Image (cartoon, rainbow, N blue to C red; front, top):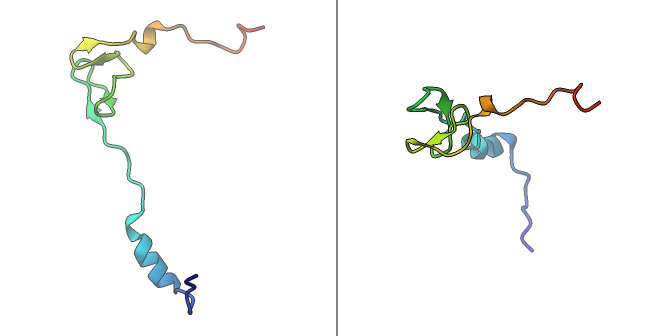
Amino acid sequence: MAVPKKRQSSARRDKRRAHDAVSAPRLNECPQCHSPRLPHRVCPTCGTYAGREVIAPEDATPELSGSEGQ
């Protein structure tokens, strides 16, 4: 089994990891409601995709509060 003879320095290790940072997701503007949304996904605000309504909008769904279940 291959085992390194010497310990790799932290500078060399960090140079290798220089490109591993996670970037923020890109957001596009929804053509119907102009809210930010992820590309190639249904708009969570108006529920449209490719010019037609795919799901019911979030605003139409009733929100659950903590006191309703008791």
